[in-house]
Image (cartoon, rainbow, N blue to C red; front, side, top):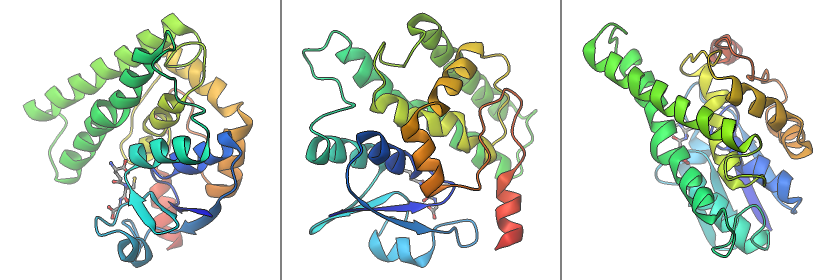
Length: 227
Ligand SMILES: N[C@@H](CCC(=O)N[C@@H](CS)C(=O)NCC(=O)O)C(=O)O
């Protein structure tokens, strides 16, 4: 039986969402942040100590993109990935890679320099913010052309990889998406998916939907005060 370890309000939401979209059987283990970083249970499972972590027989593995690929091909008959024969294969591969290779690191970088006390008027901070703005325009432009999903007409794992950065990640680093109408329309489509609703009910029932333009309020402060 596949086991998915999800740390609430984290990138591991992708894996719960994927399993719900694929409608596969899996055992969901929920973890709380302790108080902000991974709890000991996640560190005991995986030496990097980050979420997600999956277990399948003798296998224990982290890294969202790896978990997504593994589950799709071992448990999902390849569904939600596009095969090389598909006309949108290159789009699928590109947007899947862009999510954790470029978009998510851009936000993480800004979050880290802010946490280190660097002011947003600092040249490096401005350069990084400019990069994030550029990447968001890139995503917005793509969605304006497809009018549907990142890889084209079909919803794929490239969407599952990307949505965390456009929603939940905004509680870690405030991003106003008001200027990106195609992203906002896309997020409305995302939350109408039954698989996304099931993930939220099972994995993050208290987390507000972060699909509006203005930066969401800081949910982490609420989590901290509960801890
Ligand atoms: N590239 C990794 C990043 C994983 C990651 O950094 N997860 C965060 C949650 S958003 C985490 O576990 N942070 C807590 C910690 O490292 O202690 C992935 O996609 O799985």
